[in-house]
Image 1 (tube, rainbow, N blue to C red):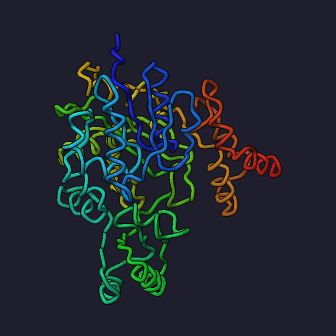
Image 2 (cartoon, one colour):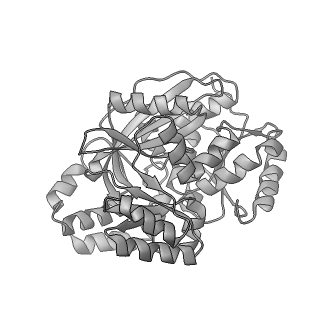
Image 3 (cartoon, one colour):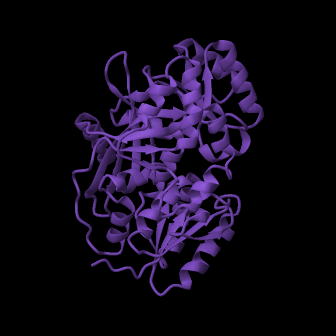
Length: 393
């Protein structure tokens, strides 16, 4: 029998937060969702949404607002963090929150090191894991020096994600760089905007060579859940977010991911993304995300409810250690995957029949759900994206 006295607070209401809210709400746990933007989770029947101050731009106001909500409850609230900007703010203010909040996240030093992509690279490299060669130039002279050590193409991405999204318009996750001139021009633009970025050599292989290990590690350092998935497609292609992913059984990937989390003394929910290098057949780490990942509802569909385990553990209800999960189940964002399909089609890598066939089988959608249907209509922008699909067909 689950005790449900503690209210769950989901921070961030994009697809990630919507998935967390549904996993808890379907277990009759009361869920409040906070976001500074009116994201898709505002329309879920499982979440009571409340607009909040920006957790970084208005950090003091946000923390006070969260405490105001917490003080009104009879029991401590349980926090679920689904976006980077919330994570940094909560981590920095954990001491003043601790009287009213239950949560399981890693140490402040580790969280801030992971949020800094260059420090994250150093931690992983020093721990002995395979990572692509990475550089952090601080001026154009250093860019000029490192370009002699690079094997093109390379990828330029944010050192710290939040400021990147604020200042880089249309840059996506980063820039694909094919030669010295593009590298110099890109960094000239970034230095003018006062944005720090890293240069990373590419791991060769198709998009289907991307994998994730997702874990929940208790406050007592016990791995209660471990889930693995593979990207089928992503958008934008090559350097985007998974638009179709599926649960898989990949023992070597799992062992590598679990060793990584143990070696860095990780706690709470986290995911590590790897890519299989087609040149040498080795798994190489791309990045760690110290929060809930976008497709977390897939694990629930496969028998591992990460938010429920998180809730039970921090409220002292001793969740069970689950080892097995269903494999071959897909998570699909149908809108972004249609855009992905068009990109692959333009490169003659996918045709319409192959795309439709890839959507068959056991699946769960990122937003659409029969028991929570309204968010699905908002995902389609009231039909605009759907009509584009209909016109195409």
